[in-house]
Length: 352
Image: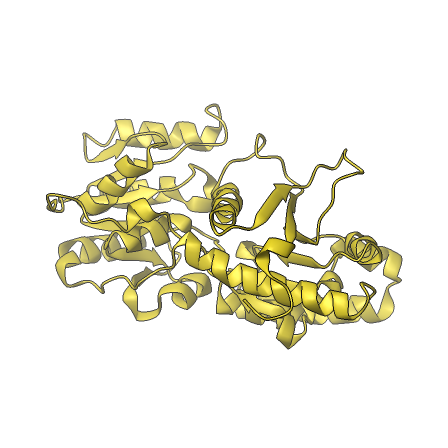
């Protein structure tokens, strides 16, 4: 860690605005695994208790985009604020749409009163002590769209748990099916993948939970699996991480055709298990995996079927996935960022 502050001197609070009980997913895993790795590294990490005025801290790490007044109030208490925001939706927009958004933001910030633009929290990027992006693509968006200062945006990818790095004993042979692990929701396009797989005659095994068992999208997905004549399988969620690692290692390849992502934890887990990747051709995927994955444009199931069949038939020669970080690696990078933020804030006397 940088000189000036040791990790034993830094008490970190994690904060987030969306309760886990309302929506599960990758962000929950990111928060929980990051905290576990930091604790293992010897850091002091608690969840911010909004009802506790006596809680103490040296730094707040907010997951999401905090309101500018949140950062200002923390600074008044001498607390630096680091935040991590997922820009999956923004990062999946077309170049013309991003250009239009950039123009709109600049016009709005120049013409509208601060009381109106504050709701969008655009200035939080310049007020925060540090901002964490998952990919170089999101770092670019933060600087270009939201005027985040160059030196404050750090790229720290998601990590992977140790179980996904461990080699199976004895080695398993890969079966002739693909695997998809994702929340069963429109954004992940699992129904569209199922339809493409049937058209292509490619077996796919799906794992993941819906946000609601009664959601029409999930019902249509279940019906597509049932009517596939055994070509498709759905195994629900897999809470056992060792079993999930075995599923990745046993599959011929991993496929995720989501419409938007920040950085897929499932894809990273599959990569750690040596599973060839077939991903939607979006900037997050290219930024994360480069030439170590295969890509499919966002098209109809009929068009996707051809790409899926090609990948499946030639999976032995598909690009090999790259090395990915462990959560311990992630914790080490974050501790450096925290230390720099605390040191700089203390040098300024805790005031912006």
